[in-house]
Length: 176
Image (spheres, rainbow, N blue to C red):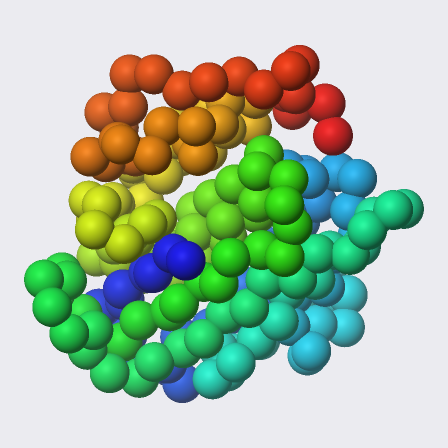
């Protein structure tokens, strides 16, 4: 489960949801899937929606169907979170294939955090560092290159500092 905090927008309802941009990013980073980003996604090339309380992202390939849920919370996250007005919870993708799950999660985080850059922050796993948008881009590139974050559960942070990741048997950007 990943969390993105938003502080520029005063509430969920004032933040546009980048439907078409997100669909294109998911398709580029997971080319074997056809994506639908929420129930309001009509497939438009410049489509923009709005954040809803609950949204379901779905990706369909020839062999499988993957879902990832998004939940908006129009409140401050308790605990040691960065200053924010509301937050988004990104559920774990419904796949047991780690490199697919990581690509989905990082693509969602890197794309959606841009709605409030430079103030938004993302925590990819509970207890890890809060990352800015610029921290996610190089991390996403490494995962797209075939490296696995889940192989290193002891990372204190997955931002700009990870020095080691593992490469699963030959998966790269074209390997899906």
